[in-house]
Image (cartoon, protein in one colour):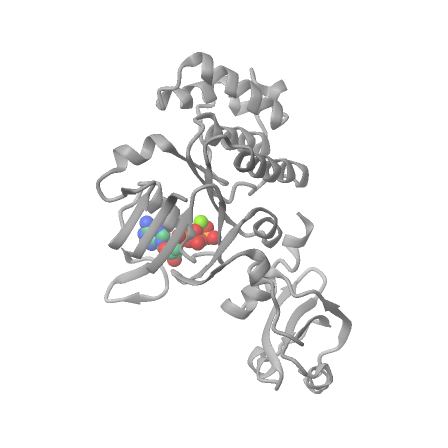
Length: 338
Ligand SMILES: Nc1ncnc2c1ncn2[C@@H]1O[C@H](COP(=O)(O)OP(=O)(O)OP(=O)(O)O)[C@@H](O)[C@H]1O
Ligand SMILES: [Mg+2]
């Protein structure tokens, strides 16, 4: 099996910026070692500022590493970017690409020209992709007349028009509605599954469900460091006898560390919903970890319990265990609705 991506001790620092400055340097990536075999969807999961985009920018030759090495299809990002660029493509969720005065089809054709794709091939691919993404009726509309979501769909299609060997998707479903996000996920999965020549996708996302559904392997990243690499199924394996609970309480200030310190609590995280004035707490308990002690503690802290719900150990729980907080801090359950 060939290796699509390999990094060794890959690090990147920036002067200024970030919170944890040391000697004027901010470490955005520290000693990242990953190896991605061809033909898989590989996810990077981590909170804001974790270093996901920085890693993708290095692998797509937009940014140089400070130290360590990165290879894409065997080529070194340091000095072989002319070999790498023709075989990769990248789509970023929030990005606003294209020329407003050109139509959707014209913009896509223009991007294909940057890669030297013959017009006939490009037009065929554009037609097929527009159909799959339900955007055919907008093919001849100037893109400054599109909604944000439609523009995002066009941007997404741009990533596939060049039939890249390796595709970087940085939050591809950002800003898409539920149906469009679902179509997008399915499209990527089919694209990899049905490829004649192996295709590799490196995906970042904030949506646990998306990571769980799409990725063959996941790297969990926080503060520039990789904390775990495994399949979603393995990450979701709970230690024998453990249990997970969602407990909703009425809003009141509380000390998270005192809850974390309750004997038998393996990990704890919470998020606040200002709108409903509630706090959603997630407790992962070790084997024999006593729920009674938690309830007692919450009551003694004056927190009113509104709901207790035993749940399956999810990717989010694995994330909480490793990172110590929820991925989508303020938006309790936002990832569950996609
Ligand atoms: N050009 C830059 N100059 C200075 N600091 C930067 C620069 N680019 C990124 N950083 C810092 O590096 C860290 C990692 O940023 P990065 O964009 O890689 O995070 P991310 O994981 O993609 O986050 P998000 O989920 O918000 O997109 C952040 O603290 C950021 O402030
Ligand atoms: Mg990012």
